[in-house]
Length: 619
Image 1 (cartoon, rainbow, N blue to C red):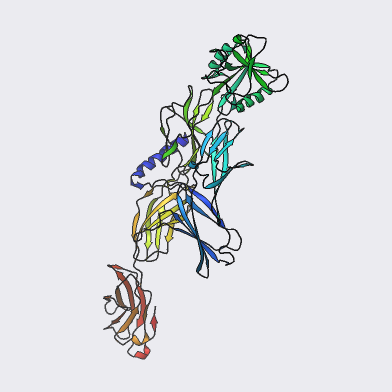
Image 2: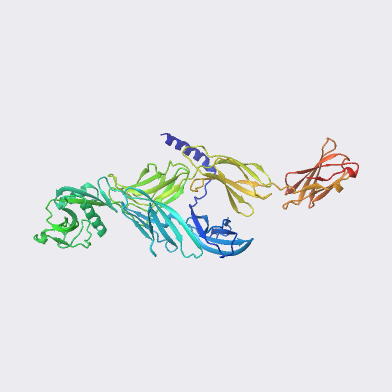
């Protein structure tokens, strides 16, 4: 109850501030890409390398990294590339400031969408055909690893435990590069389905043996009543036949039992209960002493010469034990399950129409969880294709998947697991506390405190109003102020603040604040000794690059006489007349640009009746 009240208060707070917030599109996750190379040109002993990477055709968004640790080979660095985006990467080797060699290549960020996943109760299959032309792929689970064969992009992991969450590690090594190794790793989670309690799982089927002997037709009816769409055992592959045979060998005293195989409709035309034809390699025949046209139902008979079982035609009225089977729902590989919107406390999904694929008795359920906590479940109408999950915590990474579930507890997996990080809460009231020509001082209020909400750090976004170039400045989460340096004087910037969750999801933000930095002051203000007269002085200064005008203020140190003020253009020296002999003056200069004045730079000068008493005055 306390958690629900907390989330309701949090929702109220979010709604109050949502009208003035800007919510950028949620970016695709970044993928860490490892680059490794040996010295080039060979024997030239490059002092450092410069790695430049940018989105293909985005020439104004270059990312540059200097690599100075080159003593050990291979030389390496890691860059972050956005999923499903193509990049141009250039590596320059330099020595004594001169470029020795330049090498370039193209790559892209691997996405979980590149991997098509299909899960049954005991297997998980991966289709990586979308990437195998450009990458060699290996996948590992625990201590077992497998590598894709040439021109193949398929993995099947067998003999898994039903109802279990598995984490697979994929390594993608880019092909066709002769001077560099480029690799990416990707962690993918998948969950196996499960059968109803008391049923045995194999791939997409569930089985249960009943040792109570019954005639064939009664056994079939009993199976149909035991679970919706259940039937006597139908074996569709040699792999399934091997599984059933192995299972029966663990059951003692089981010599003969009914299957779904029969030729009741047409003598000699063997069909399973679902109408499919018999296609196994094993021969089927009735007992030689029995009339063939009266042995229409087929049982599995233990081979007296070995551990295996074979099919034997028998009288249908004979009472035998039997095996029931039902299939878990399966959907096409090209089905869609994707995120359409992400907010702080809710996520909206959309998917392909499932109704025609769900078997009778199975309901559509959205399953989601955070870390390894107990999963939540939301029942959905079978004919819906979208849903909104609410009352989530801001800034946390959840896992979502669609499943089909029946009242007996069977569960079929209908989608891959999607990892979705909710937006973190936004900070408030970003404002400037001081602006100079070289610095901008900022402060802000942190997001509203909540034990449910999380974020990793702050991010200041800085837009140069002249070049439209963006710069981002990360700030530790325990700070609520910062100083931005290395800025241009009398320059316009737009600033806004975002919070960043652990996986990189950005919060919404308040509207940017517009800041014009101050005009830079004169770089030097000084008076030469020979320029000091009894009633005048010549003032010298250095204009900043952006200024043409100067403001001069001459103030006597004693309360004698008035403060003189001057505005001059295009000059770096000025003679000040009609001063009081022997008086000490504070003389200040500021640069002026379009009516905006820099801070004053001051020099003190004392006049005397004799020139010899004057000194050398400099700021």
